Length: 388
Figure: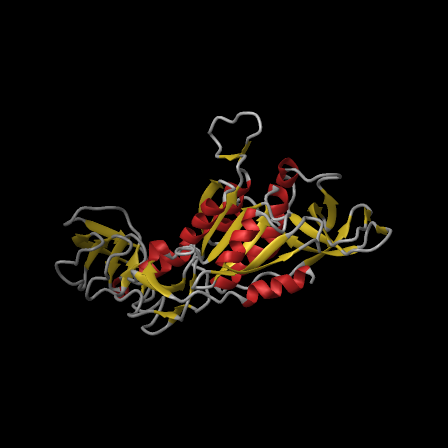
């Protein structure tokens, strides 16, 4: 089975998450479910567009007596009539009797203000309903909530919105040699890089990530860690020894659910996928080598996260190899840096995390003999392992 067939199986196990009604602050990055309409006109009153004087347009040009000064949120004490003006601030409700707002020097009540003209009625005024009428669709279904979306909805008086929630991705790293960054490391121990990296990648793609780091390679500990996380996970990612068929990780995954393993269709080693627990939570098992886990995460986990969010995953694009690449017996997944459509592999031998920092895409080199020629077109998928 090839990588695309594995991905089809993974995507078949996930569905867009059920909509939730949540606060605007929680909705950032989520997909709106259902059109959001204006409940009232916006603005719901005739509004002064500028700071100046509310007047009757027919009175200008003229010297008008200032009879009041009004700040936003307050109403004028009296209407505008012939020969007078009311000083207003931008955003103030247009005083009764006025049909225009014009600029002028700041004067006190009782003084006479010389105002230029003529002006047309409606000058300097935002009429009620200028931005939206009641019932207008302001945010179409499927829109991703951005800070601007939050601002628009807040301006309409909305406090809550129905959205597709962010998937909860739980990353469990398994290995006796793993220690958390910041912990003193002695000989034979390594800092857990895959866990923090994959959590960051998940959040970059709109998920909420949780890390359970450095679980001991002991059957009960692995089983307990995974079983505990099935309660909160929409997607469970387990990182560890996927190479040995009788490894603790594989054995415990088999006990928890239905997980099958790819034994070497790619150059990155075995990986597994399936479902676990009574709720049949999607599970992805990735190799413990952090760079390999990162590439497989980009190709397998990221499309699953997009599917849960109800957001289309962009198709692979074609790039051209900047140099020839030896073919192998398995599909080669290579981290590359793309410049002007030319893909340069970031590593000539074993891929390291330092190499990965310089990469922005992963390309596929089909198995075969000989060389994949320089300049040949190959499919490339974005490799996002850091927040942009």
